Length: 107
Image (tube, rainbow, N blue to C red; front, side):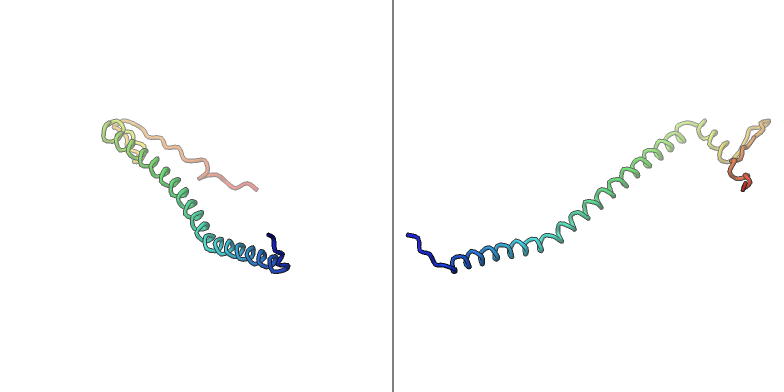
């Protein structure tokens, strides 16, 4: 038995549709800031991961330099000669300057 209620059934369907639509909009409004916060946190996490990898590479390099200095006296001698420009008795030290420090500006 179908009873035609006329316009009231159409209005009821429209009100239910609008209610569901309003509910979906409210849910979207509720979760949208959380989604943006999650995206920002993911970007920050990726940035920190890149920084961590760079720092770990630096730590590995420094550890290898430390091990080389403490394990081999020849390394210490070489570094002393290079950095402090020391020499043994009877040696002559020749220092080459960078070309950029004494270059003239040509116009």
